[in-house]
Length: 201
Image (cartoon, rainbow, N blue to C red; front, side, top):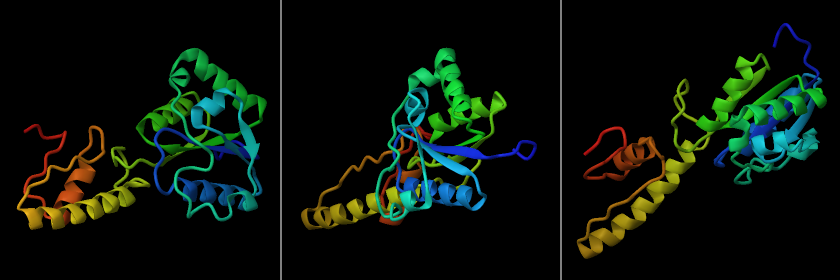
């Protein structure tokens, strides 16, 4: 980005929503405004990029959003963006809007799209945001801490019932192919056994 004069950037949130996405949108927007850049939000992730769903973002637009769950920009999965025609449409919309760089907030699918943009020479910044914590290159992704704490709270409540009735509970967590939530919750919650996708039992 240093070789190009940045004047206008956009931000999108994509894939599954995660706690903290709004804080990332707010931070990106305020940082852009502090640099004197125009900032745009893309509605509904890559689907919005293809639909040309851009809207200006100002400091007041992102005030008071960090306490809200989900993402104020909306999110959607977009298999069309993976196809060459969809990718070309997204690039054309970025060019037509005069967008000089893009901030992508999301998980592995979202960052795969960001990587493709980068490989094509378009400046992009990826912010790792997924409760699964399954992105290479970062220790903790946005959203995973909240996911672990919510899961641990549920386990603590189940433990009381299990103790009262001499029962064992099998708790399945989210995480797709990554056992991070299961491991962290199991350790903190005192599980007898922790089963993860990475280690077949």
